[in-house]
Image (cartoon, rainbow, N blue to C red; front, top):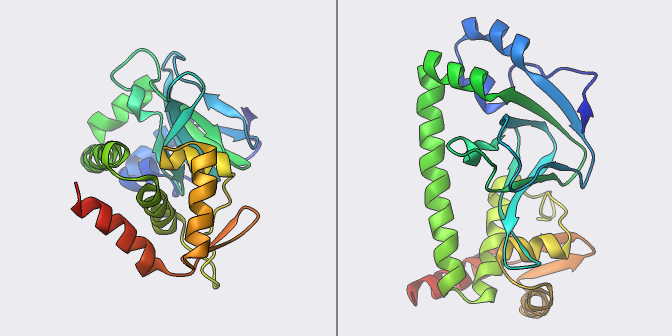
Length: 232
């Protein structure tokens, strides 16, 4: 991770959009922009908390250890989203963050971030709403991991990716994930997800070409998640 030669535009990230215009000079003076390579770790689980990050461009996976040699992808951060906030009330980050593609991030140290919260009431309120939504989504995912079969979890993961990243004209998900990352997001082993993907292809719910996934039957995927949720 190296310091970027180009600063952000002070308009794109969650923090900039929510703060009053009078606070922008302070943001400009305290921001640190970094370029991150694909596959590069921004911070890892257990690192000391030094600040909070925002995505200016690119895509970041937020993940944590799951067992001895596995990981669980908690969420993806893109389009100005915040990440690293799960370490605000601790001394070390409880999660890791890794760039999925060449990514530019905006970093603010804790002192400035806390000052921003105190001065900008709209930002504090919007962050509170984000925390509530993030917690609700995390609780839902934990429930699904405990009760929903892999087929339903994989269907839910694909629909979540569609909602966040959108699709191209031919319904291809507008994000390329390795099978390992898709497995980590669905909370299943690589082998199980590989077999389940073949089932979804056979059922004509999706098509796959390398890392590209095309949703053929969104209603069918949704029915898989609804059927499994109704059994809980």
